Image (cartoon, rainbow, N blue to C red; front, side):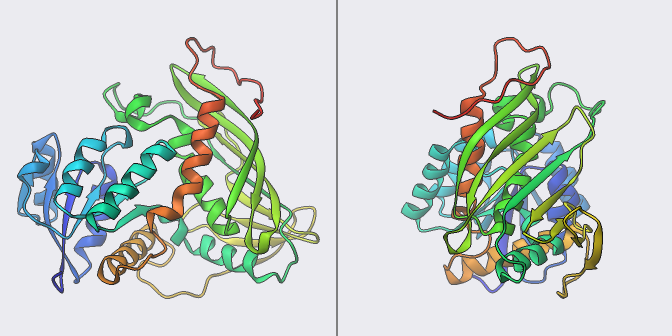
Length: 348
């Protein structure tokens, strides 16, 4: 493997344009060799913006690289992953990593067979607030973690996109709000709590046009030192709800922001803020989302060079994959939906 990592980009969408390419362009240890997209004009235009000389519409035509960023919808990745594995390229997948545990397992099996590394782009793990909250939860200084409440949502009046957008297609996107936004929130909760396993007790979903626009789930997590805590998670694109994560201990609460610039607040039992905390960590663009993308790329490049698991190793997102899949199994897409919440359904 060369001193400078050769990167290929599969997918020329907004997350690549706005985050991955700006960050990769600022990393001296990498060289972006090409951009590939089914719409070649889009790949060409994006490549020109960031000085990437080669653009393709067929992955089979792309020259050799060390790592491929897979930034195409989760529901249409398998044929491309087959090509990538056959060519023995390391894979860094944008979220969501996989739609099912079976698909997750297939990716990891093929990677092991071909002796390549696989990473997952869950950049919220690297937000300052997430890092600090995880340290506080693991320290034990507040006693045992009793409950976790997490919610994210706002009323979405429109997207400005036509029906060709992948998020309008549940098969391409892997689902609606629970898959697209929920994979971030569930993973953020699991990361902060150092969760080892989960038990889903019940979930409810709101479907519109075959897509879930809201979800509520509750259960328990097995966390560090074999302790358990209860969790409740809510997501919505139909109403404004509180955006944040609340960790409840016996005598206080820790409230965590969801964004790159979000903070951590210590609160009393009633939720009144007592102190604001800051994560003392270096890095460029502190408090910006670019720092999180930089950190995840740095982790995966180190994983590829050393062949040792990093913070972005794909096995680390198994819990999130399984939990979301179980919710969809309990609350499958209805043949007809009226935009109302289903009743809570409990696993048998």
